[in-house]
Length: 395
Image 1 (cartoon, helix red, strand yellow):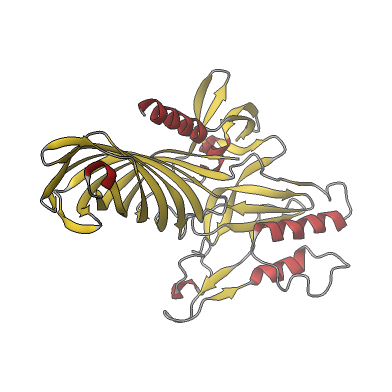
Image 2 (tube, rainbow, N blue to C red):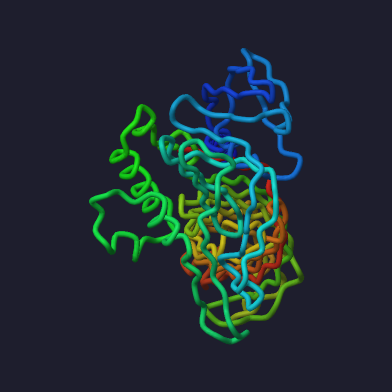
C-alpha cells in the first residue's frame, strides 16, 4: 500500500513540473539571450513582482521581467512589452458601474497572436482576456473595445461592441461581404481569422506575416495541493444512523488537472484520517473502531470562474478507503474491509494559494455483514483548508 501511494505521488509531481523549453528574451537594450524556461512561467508575466527562472545548462538564474522587453519560444510563442491604455473591465462580474470605459495607462506584456501588416495581441487577465491591435507597425497597440454592463443593478447584461466597428474600419478587405463583422465574437480564434485574412489580402513585403499558434504554451493547468480537514462522523449500522462519533481529523494531498477553458477539472486526492468510534450498538452487539484510514478519491470538478484567483467550485467523485486497524465487535478485534464511497464537495478559492472546502462523504462500510454480522460504517461532513504547493501548465 505504501509503495503504491509513493509511486502515485512521484508520478503526480513529475506531471506538474512539466518540461523545460528552448526560449529567448530581449533586454531593454535589444540584446538577445537564449536559454530554457518552463512555458508556464509565460502566463505569469503580468503578476506583481513577476520573474522568470532562466536555465542555462544545469543552473538557473532569476530574471526580473522589468529587464525584459520581449520573450518567446521559437516561432511559436511571443510576448512583447508595451505601455498601453487598457480598459480591464471585469467580463465575469458585470456591474452598473461598467457602462463607461475607464482606460488606465499600464506597462504590460501582450501575447502576440498575429504579426504582419496588422498585428493582433492578447492581454491575459483574470477579469477576462482583452485584445489589442496595431497596423503598419504603428505602436503602441490600441485596445479592441468590448464591455459588458448593466443599466440597473437587477437589469440584463448588455454589450458594448465597438470592436466590430474598429475591425470594419481598419482590417477589412476590398472583397469582404458587407456583414462580415456584424456577428464576430470577442474571441481569440474569431479575431485571429479576421487578422490573418486581412494580412493575406494586403500587398507589401510585410503583409502575410506570421500567426503564433502558442502550442508550446500550456494547455492544461495542473495544481498540486495539501489540505487538512475537521470531520463530523455519523455512525451507520445496518444502514441506520447509530449516533455520532467525536470530531475526527484528516490531512492529505490533491492533484487536479484543469482543461484549457479553465471550467472543468479532474482530481485525485489521497487522505489519511484518524477516527475513533465507540459503542455503536445493534442487536446486543457493540461495534467500534480506533485507528487510521487511507482513502483515495477521484472525480470531476466545475469552476465558476477559474480565470480569477478567488472563485467557487463544485465537485463529485468516487472513493476507495482502506482501514489500517481492526473493527472491534464485543471487545474482539475482527478485521475490516476495503470499501467504496461517493463524495460531493464545494469550495471557495480565496487566493491562488489558499482555499476553503466543504465535503460530504456518503456512508461507506468498513466492515461487511459477512465479516462482523452487520454492515458497519460511517459518513462524514468535512470542513477544511487547502494550500497550493505548486502549479504548472502542460500541453
